[in-house]
Image (cartoon, rainbow, N blue to C red; front, top):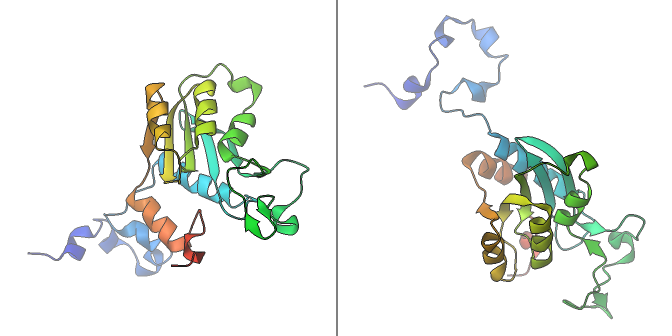
Length: 202
């Protein structure tokens, strides 16, 4: 009985010159290699877009797409023309302490920015979908519904109101936590961390 490695060899490889094979992407020469699907690419793009965030606590990226074509993207952070929190400090920090839930944040959420970045030509499109790095909050969920986005994929959980998913589903928006072997390996390789958990004290 052959080994698992022998089973994975592509039939044309033995007849190909070794120097030619060495010039190829080696990982593609294994039968187990699977190309990333569009959702994998959208998830990657959302994560990369999130690196544009100016927030010191969360990095969030969002894409809106239709029939596998990306229409817009957005990330969280201060409004255009406002100060850079990294240079000026977070507006929620008062006298050295963070004041949460008091409306002090100067940031706009990734989902809202992605919706705002849609072009006028997309207004008539139906069945829009969104890929977000973090599960949407209650405020963003309302705008997702208003825009007519019918399916939301998110990669990581977010400390949110438990009712948000139920709210979206009740208004006919499908909510799916997206993961795949390809995406997991890619995230692990690059060490992405949307809420700075690796820096938190245990």
